[in-house]
Amino acid sequence: MASQNAGKLQVAIVGGGIVGLITALGLLKRNIPVKIYEQASSFREIGAGVAFTANALQCMALVDPVIVDAVNAVATQNGQEGAPPNDYLRYHDGYNWDPNDIEGSDDKLLGLLYSGYKGFQGCHRAALLDELVKYIPSHAVEFRKRFTECKDRGPNERLLLQFSDGTSAEADLIIGCDGIKSKIRQLVLGPENPASYPYFTHKVAYRALIPMERVEPVIGAFKAYNQHMHTGPRAHILHFPVSGGKLLNVVAFAAEPADWPLGDPNGVRNMTSPATRADVAAVFQGWGPTVTKIISLLPDDIDKWAIFDTYDHPAPTYVRGRVCLAGDAAHAAAPHHGAGAGIGVEDGLALCTLLEQATATLSSQTNATTGAVVEAALQVYDAVRPPRSRWLVQSSRSVCDVYEWVHPETGEDWDKCLAEITARSHRLWYFDIDGMLKELRDGYESRFPPSSSSSGVVDAGKFAEGAKGKMDGAVMENVAIGIAT
Ligand SMILES: Cc1cc2nc3c(=O)[nH]c(=O)nc-3n(C[C@H](O)[C@H](O)[C@H](O)COP(=O)(O)OP(=O)(O)OC[C@H]3O[C@@H](n4cnc5c(N)ncnc54)[C@H](O)[C@@H]3O)c2cc1C
Image (cartoon, rainbow, N blue to C red; front, side, top):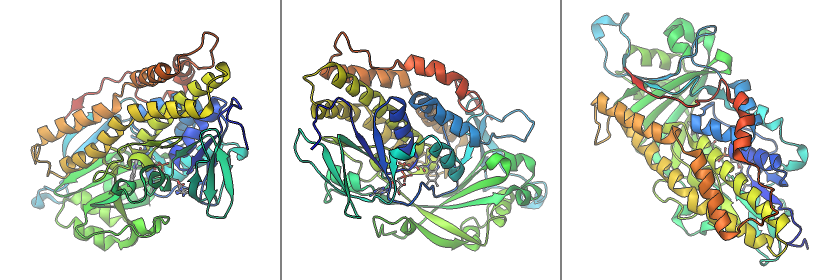
């Protein structure tokens, strides 16, 4: 059996989605041995487009600048080719329109929210994954490994991960990046705990990618190549260009009063169900011409995605001993801030930072045991990360109510709506990353003060310097966000 004083940590990441991959890249960058155990036979992303908020991009640069390279390689700026990028999120009234002016009538612009230079660029999910995977060495991943159980064989032994194929693996700690139906969350919180499971938000998303050559003649170039949010009563539609402007990513959100049983906790398909363009048209019946035209572009058959989250039963902790949760496994949120993956990237940065400190302790303090060092690092993670990610879960629900004109404090008063959206978005985007890193480092050092000879920790400032050039064109840096209407 492996000794606990071997000096180097062996990390197991369960789940090779975006958060698992990014966390693994950060650990590899810091020379911390890591292996991803992914249940699928290859890396794959389901869904259509994803966009990243400024805080996420800044954290990516600190985790490993190659991640920003990957985003830059596939991100599509808002604005037509050759034109300066359009850096504003656009909110429109998709519902009220002048029936006497069908041809000329358009969604009324309700407000603009500055999202930073080239802010909130869309990425095709599969293309982004392909880029990220290029940086993962083959020795750092095993496919067809569905995690089932973990055996804790005592404080001086590595944890034993067991997989559905009967095989097992050892690690000093496990990071559960296994998504919204996380098995590791059940391990951390207990299978009887209602917080071990996500719950239906009674919202669904109809998602499609539409070839741009079909889109532009119908809604015009400006709408086609710029991000738009069409708000209205109890529903809304978001669209933005992806794949270098070759595709339009459309997501239509609507209420779904009926229950949606979670079904097979290992499946994915049961979170989607087949739907048609006619279903979406029925939801948005009576809306304005722009929304009606966008719906007319949807394919005949389309998937309806159930939106689950952890709002009803938030995880009281993300950690148990040497096992922790990150990304959707910890705090799955509804997608209305466009930030679920982004806040998972913050988790990844926090874990990389702490495990780097833990590694430095192990190499400099011979009396420190791996178990104690890992548990200390994860306790600090659990003290620092949950408040912000729990807020995201709550705010994602609230901001959806604002978009759909049913928030009790904003209703249909669009000045109030925009002020509310701005305040929430700024709280998300203007995240004090340096503050988080300091809190993590101080918290860890209060448990394991660095020895005078210890110098293993990489200075985040140096990372930031190296990352700066990479971030150009994809990140909001020193943004002065403002509202224009
Ligand atoms: C409609 C919609 C739009 C969104 N838009 C955005 C956006 O614009 N920006 C943004 O930041 N976020 C967005 N999100 C949220 C974002 O998609 C998620 O937060 C993110 O994908 C979660 O990543 P993850 O790695 O934590 O989990 P996942 O991507 O779910 O990955 C989990 C991985 O774990 C594997 N796995 C599961 N169980 C096991 C097991 N037992 N053993 C081994 N492997 C296992 C799975 O196969 C999978 O590969 C959106 C979500 C939706 C639904």
